[in-house]
Image (cartoon, rainbow, N blue to C red; front, top):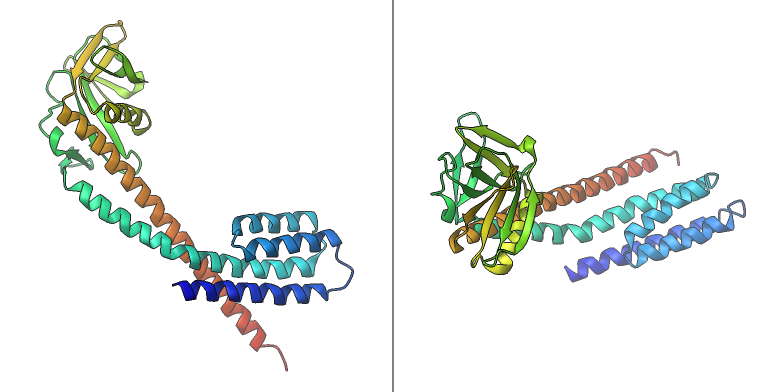
Length: 288
């Protein structure tokens, strides 16, 4: 791997030097500022600062639209630089996907798949929260790992005549550790109880608060529209389930985006190969 990486860098530097020599022979019809910009591009690519190099290439196109030969040569370099960047990044990306997959497999061992209904999708519940029945008319919360659109949530049932307006995590002294507002649109009232879900953006600070306090003496407190507080005791086991649910959902989200990055790098490599193949065919078709 080390030799391959050095070979890529060596090839890139040689290619850049060759292009620079050819650009220098274009004559004095190109603005000196454009050549200075090209020199900066070459330096960025040589040290592996690809993103800044691409930004400078865009500046070259914008600031010096009349430098046709220079811009054409730089665009060819851009394709090669993108290919080199993809080659250097892809092994790390694949390794990250493999690592996250192993971590998810390990974390998933503590979860059980549940089906909401025959027409709706499934979700995962931590073993410590499987006995919680949200359909029963009593105050309760249950963390669930869902899908990429909603990585995880805290499903809640509140027995109250008034709609819930907030959910808080409090310590044994009643101090608020984390709090989130509950939208009326997110609540459904049936059988004398309110049912609502706290989505990932709001639920994650609640999980972080429980993790910081290890769930000791904490409780979930739902406040209704009349200002009445409804306390739901959080055992150490339930706190563990909530924290573990957030962790698994985070791993799954990271894996999703890591795979997307790998796919992007693979497409970039393929595009570079296709362009090189097209350039080769165009060269071979020229008359001798």
